Every structure is written in C-alpha cells, then in structure tokens.
Amino acid sequence: RGLTEVGFYHLTRSSLEEALPRLLEKAYAAGNRVLVRGGDAERVELLNRSLWTYGKDSFLPHGARSDGFAEDQPIYLTTQVENPNGATILVRVDGADAPDLADYARCLDLFDGGDPDAVTRARGRWREAVAAGHGCTYWQQGERGGWVKGGG
Image 1 (cartoon, rainbow, N blue to C red):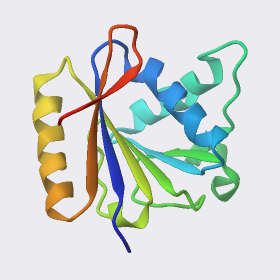
Image 2 (image 1 turned 180 degrees about the vertical axis):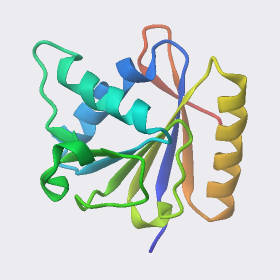
Image 3 (image 1 turned 90 degrees about the horizontal axis):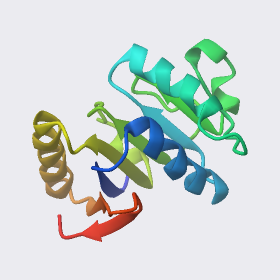
Image 4 (image 1 turned 60 degrees about the vertical axis):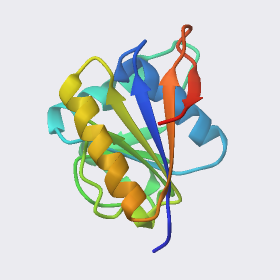
C-alpha cells in the first residue's frame, strides 16, 4: 500500500453522466484499467448503460457485476469495495467509500458543485486524503467544460 494521487473534480458545467465518459476515455487510452465506484446500485446501473450511448463514435469497453466477467473488464463499475479487474485508477462518484484508496495509483473523485452537501462531503474527503499523506489536486470545470487546475 502506498500513496495515491487524488484528483478532486468539481462538476460545475456538466453532469456526471456527461463528464465521466471523457475522463474514462483518457484513462483507457493511456492503457489503464479503471474501477468506477458509486454509492448507489441504481446510479451505477444508470452509468453503466449511459457509457454505451454517450457518443455515437465512441466506445469504452466496460461492465458491471450484472454483465459478468469482472476480471476481464478494462473499466468496471461497482458499489462494492472490490477490485476484480486489477484497476490502478479508482473513480469515486457520489462520495462512495474508499477504505482501499492506498491500493490505487490514482483516484478521481467527482462531485457535483451544484449540491452544497456534496461539496461539503468532498472537502471532508480532501482533508482525510491529505491527513493520510496522499497527494491531492483540485480541478474545476472551466467555461467550456474543460478541466482547470485550481488551488483547492
């Protein structure tokens, strides 16, 4: 177990369903295996379905428990604290628990800037990550929806 580079992604211009595929595309294109962990089974299933239809010219190989073959999925979506596909990148959505944070090289923590409770909880996760010695960066969506590194 080591230290994890944790990026906090403050969604202000687009929904999770719009932002997540773009971030996953970058991670997948770089050859990484990714685990997307959500706090709610319905939300994970919705994200699983939306990843098939988000762009007509795009394809992200992914799956969830209901699809089977977890260990073969380059991108795996779950609500569980598990890593069946040997992911090196953890994507946390909806403030999902990550007691295994140190098992990943990188973590992307996406939170809704339009929800004051989500912002407050993200600040708490930031403090916990810093206290554990992880490196944290803060990213906010710019005017055109791209990511701009901020001061945190």
